[in-house]
Amino acid sequence: MFLGHFAVGFASKKFAPRTNVAVLIASACFLDVLWPVFILLGWEQVRIQPGDTRYTPLDFVSYPWSHSLLMSMVWATAFAVVYYLIARYRAGAIAVWIGVVSHWVLDWISHRPDMPLYPGGPLVGLGLWNSVGWTMTVELFLFFMGLWLYVQATRARDRIGHYGFAAYAGLLLLFDIANRYSDPPPSVAAVAWSGIVAVIVLIAWAWWFDSHRTLRALGLSV
Image (tube, rainbow, N blue to C red; front, side):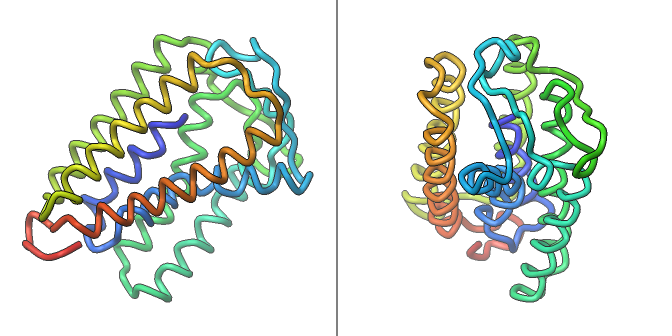
């Protein structure tokens, strides 16, 4: 999943309107924030193996600390507690917890059986990535639903809030298409470093445009 995780972040704004969407997106993508770091540290392994599934050339050999169900709940709890201690906003903390765990659920739907239930535990996965057509259909449906819910909750109060958001959504779509139809990455390190840079840029960008939008129901700055 790629767009699906961002969809969860955008949709969560409807439930936790006082939380900046960058935090909600960060929670939904949090396991993929950890994963490239753990890859570079040698704690987890991935191989570039075109054909492993029809949708991605990556073979996720081992990632129990970032992507097991048990650890996703641990990370979700840690993220939610830290957020609550800073923001004192219960709805936001709940949205953050659900966002982190939703990442495992969406990956479980997408991946072949390589998703661990717990470190050293059984591997599961429904294998949506074995169908390119169904993967793109599900991802796009989730993404546009997430965008729609976000727009239902907020409105732009200036050009940044309007065009910054529109450009962000468009870039995510381009990234998804490019990722699907580009050549396999040259190395595992390239996968990890590009993931780290992308996360930093995309979360900062989301904070920027969301800060220039207002809540529709209250007419307050986000």
